[in-house]
Length: 308
Picture 1 (cartoon, rainbow, N blue to C red):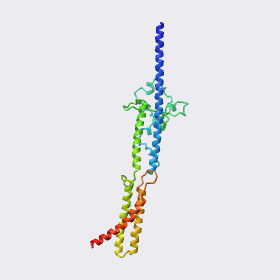
Picture 2: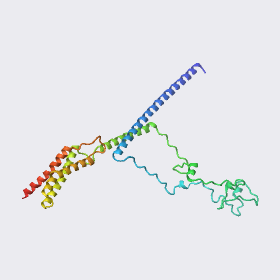
Picture 3: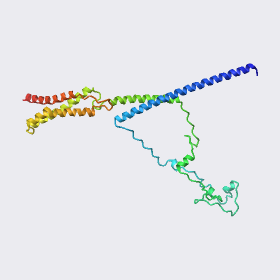
C-alpha cells in the first residue's frame, strides 16, 4: 500500500470520527431538549392537578370515586387453563388382531407375562409415576390457572395457529411529548372555561352584581307586599287590629323582606370561586325593602279609593 492510500485512509477515518462526534453532540443536545421538555410538562401537569383540586374543593368534591375493578367474565378460557394430558386413545392397548401396539411402533418390546405399569383410574398410563423407583413422582402435576398462565406464556396472533404476534414499533419520544403538550393545552383551555363558570353565581349568572341585588331585594319586597295585602284583607275581616297591621307594614314585613334578600344573595348569589365576599349592597336593599312595602300599601289604598 502506497503513502497516498494511507493518507486517504487516514482522512476517511478522521472524517468518520468527526461525523461520529457531531452525531453524538446532536444526540446529546436532543436528549437535553427532551429532558427539559419533560420537566416543563411535568410542572404544567402538577399545576393543573393543584388547580383541579381547588376546583373540586370549591364544588364540594374532594376526590373522585375510585372505579371498581372489572370482574372476570365467567367461562374465560384462562380460568380453567391446565396442562393438557395425552389423548384418550394414546395410552390404550391396541385392538385384538392388530398385532401391533404403541410400544411396538416406538421400537420397544415387552416380554410375555412382564408386569405392566400401574395406570390411572380411567385406563390411561401413569407416566413417570409408573416407573419403578419413582413412586413419589406425579405423572402430570396440575397447576392453578394463574400459575399455568405464568409458566406457559403463549402469544396468539389474530390469524390463529399459535404464532406470536408482531411486536409494536417503538414510539418517538418527540412525537409523544408533542401529543402530551397538546393535551395539556387542551386541559388548560377547559380549566379556564371551568374557572369562568365557577366565578359566576347560580342566581342570574349573566347579570351584574348591582342588578342582581336590586332584583333580589325587589322580589323580596314584592313578596312582602303580597303579605301586606293579605293582612289588609284580614284587618277588614276583623282578624287583625289596626296597631298590628301598622307594625307589620312599617317594620315587620320590610325587615323580613330585607333579611330574606340578604340570605338569598349569600346562598345563591355568591360564586363558587371568588376572592373575598361579594357585595350585597345592604343600604340599597334596606332602602328598597323599607320603601317598597309601604308603597304597596299606599298603592292598595289608592286603588280601593279609585274603584269606589
